[in-house]
Length: 267
Image 1: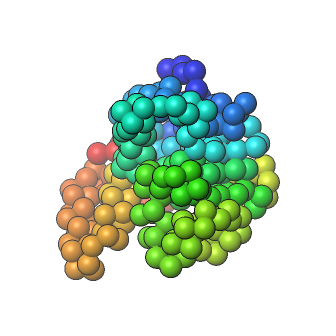
Image 2 (image 1 turned 60 degrees about the horizontal axis):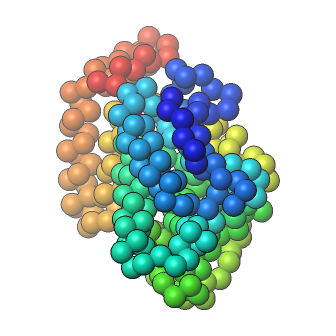
């Protein structure tokens, strides 16, 4: 795997390469994994490479250390930026966050400690969030003279509803993982220090399924949930019919009848 200054890309703890579960670790623990330009550049490159890894089944995103998943953009670096420099850096961030949202495999966020601003938005871009009960989230941008620009508004509205989203956005209020779970933001609550191990355990469950089926189910759940029922269902059936003609559909039925684990080909 490639090496980076601000990231680690490595097999998930307790897994082998053939398990297809990779950890993408934000690796600036000395600044609570704040995201600078170098990290955005490296995230873009890493996500592009990982998206074309045929052996990858699930990506787990987490932060180095116990203090933070990520506290968002590095405001020390941003201090004094020109409008052009700010917009250019933010364009990189947009590319990274959309690459997470549209990643071909499931992406699970494992959150310990603080997840604020862009760090919170990165977690929200993942397919689901496993968080320690001690984790703390916020979107404080309005108190910095700006607003969330990394998909946080749209994801928060879709998860928690418009009224709750506006309350959290406009007050810049911090909220804990237990509240986040009640508001449908966090998916799985765990004890402190267990977010990554639990995310990897959930990734193992996903990896038991056929890769093509997982991909198309993710796409239709993501896209179909944003349109009316009949349009979403039409998308379901279009994807379903692609899978009917797949080798994995034949293998799945055969393995069930022969009472053995399936051997997926991804085709």
